[in-house]
Length: 418
Figure 1 (tube, rainbow, N blue to C red):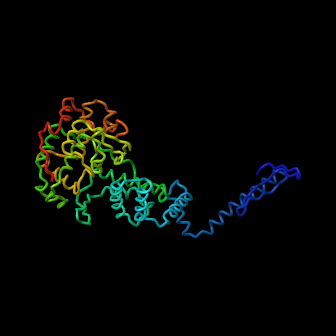
Figure 2: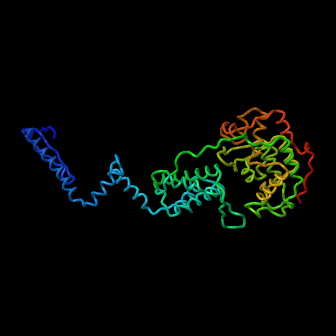
Figure 3: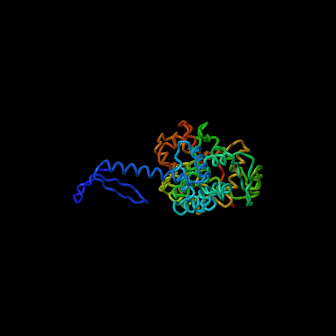
C-alpha cells in the first residue's frame, strides 16, 4: 500500500499493489481505510493459499521435509535444495577422473609448455590417482577420501625391461607425499577453473619438512678421493645392485668419461644434474670461459643463464675434453652413473643428491663472500634460496683447497677410452 496521485483522477489517493500469477496488479482507493481493508484481505488470501498448497502435499513428502529440516538445523531447506540442484547439474556432464587426466596433461604440454621430463613425472602420479578414482567425477571426491588415499600410498617401482609396476610394502616418504599433493592440487585447481568441481578436496597446506642438518657437501679431500677412485674404476667390473631394481646395471660398459664430465661440470660449474644431462659440448665456450645454459635451463631459472668457467674447471676441460661435440652424456649414462655411485659407496664415500652443486655454492661463497654473484651463477632469482638450501659456511683455506683441485695437483693420468 502506498500514496497515489493522478491528475486525471484526483479523488484516488491510495494504491495497493499485489502479484497474481507472476504479474503485478494494482487497485486504487479514495480512502486510506478502504485501501487498508483490501490489503488485509489480500494478505489473508495469500496466507490461506499457502495453507491450501501445504494441504495438497502428501504425508510422505511432509515427513521428508521435516526430517530434512532437522538434519539441516538452522540452515535453509530451500538453500540446501538449490545447492544440491547445482551439484547435480555439475556432475551430469559425464566427465570422470579417467577422462579429465589426459585433458589436463594436454593443457600442461600445449598451453603451459611443460617439458617432457616433468610431464612424465606428473603423468605417473596422476595415473596412480586415476587408478583409484577412475570412474568418479571430481566434484564427488571428498577431502576425507583424498586424505585416506594419500595416507595409504605405498612405494611403487617399475623394473627396467618390464611393463608391470610393483607395489612394495613400504610407505611413501613425507617428501614424496608432498609431490603427490602438489600435482593433485594443480589438477583440481584446473578442474575448478573449468567448472568441473566447485570446491577443492585437498585440505590445508602440505607438512613442512625441516632440515635436520646443513646441506651435504664434500670436503676437498672427499672430492679428490672421488675423482681418484673414478680413474681406478672399471665399469666392466661392476656388480649388479641388490634390491628392488635388479638387473638395471651393465656387465660391461667401456665408456666412462662422461661421468668425469658430470663430476667436474657440476662440482666446479654448479650445474644441476638435469642440466648436465641435457648439455652439449657446443654449449661450452672455453675461449670465452662461459657455459651457455640458455637453451637447457630447468626449474624456475632465468632463461639467459650463463655460468663462468673457473680456472680449475678450465684445466679439467682442456686436458680431458678438448674439442668435443654432441651430448656430454653417452648412451646408458644413468645406469653407469648409478654403478659408479655404488662403487663409491663400497669405498666409504656417499654420493648424496645434489652434493656436487651444494659443494660448488658453499665453496664459491667461502672464497668470494658475494651472495648476489653466487646466486646468479646458480641460476637463482634471489639470494634466499642460496642461504636456505645450498650455502654451508666454509673457511677461505678450505675454499682455496677446493678450487685448487686440478689434474696437475692430483697427478692423474689420462684415461684411454678407445
